[in-house]
Amino acid sequence: MFAHVAEGSTPRVDVTRPKDSVTRSTPRVAVISLGGTIASSATPGVSGVTPRLDATDLLSGVGAVEEIASIDARAFRLVPSSDLSLSDVTSLVGEIHARLDEGAQGVVVTQGTDTLEEVAFALDLLVRRDEPVVVTGAMRHASDAGADGPANLLDALRVAAFPAARGLGALVVFNGEIHAARYVRKTHATSTATFRSTSLGPLGWVSEGHVRLGFSLPRWPDLNVSLERPAPVALISASLGDSLALLDHVRAAGYRGVVVEALGGGHVPSRALERLEKLAREIPVVLASRTGAGETLTSTYRFAGSEIDLLARGLFGAGALDARKARILLSVLLGADTSIDGCRRAFVEVHDAMFRSDVEH
Image (cartoon, rainbow, N blue to C red):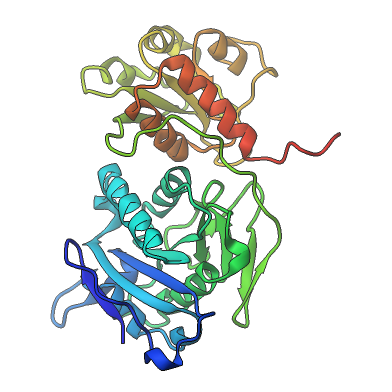
């Protein structure tokens, strides 16, 4: 029923039903599987589950897909998402572009939820096409009672095949909701409603098989980024009384940039200021808020370790990006050998592009 193409093999023609029953209006959607909980099942007599199901297996558990699209199923990885790397994402971007170049009108990526928000955001930055790229997964594995994978996959297919989803960038479809990759976060360790866009809410939802989209998104600016060699970027979280002494070791460890998950709107303990200022002269140091919602401040507080103080010392803010997304952005910028000032400008441009600016106030 599905064309199953393993990684590195020669593609075959994809069909989901006999050719004489496929109309010209049937959209083509590529489904690319990476593993994760949605692909995990139990082995009799062995405790715990592991990724075992590929794209064809996942689709076999979903009814009525032939009414939605002609499917091209691709097994790309079969790993827990904690083992995915930015190099895997780079390869995934190439795979997505190849499927779109072959005529797919949308792409669904299935993966584990541990790093789903990061992969989706990277795809949002790197896949510069209008066709929908939809990322989904599951919180309950395939052997679990009430597994949510089939419903999430079916909804993701509906969104990927939906014409009005074009031009929205990468999307995350989960638990009946449609989220923009630039806003969504995993917020709960086990809940099926774990993915939320805490700042703005979802773009829409899927109801009774119908896709409902509430609003559009500004496009990303053209950024100087590298798909081939993302640079290592450290993520360090500030906390009560911390001097951030780990920063003294990031250069020796090979990191080319740092994201500090700062307190509140972009603050750190004053005892960390000297090492932060020294490091910011050498590599980009980005401040993100550990709250996960809202944006870093620029001009409200003036005390040692405040955002005004830190920006004056050469650090710059992540704006509305959380720390994990800021790390992805900084990594692909540095992969293109972007300067510190170039990274600073790119973060401003990305922040501005996350909100509508064409309305007069």
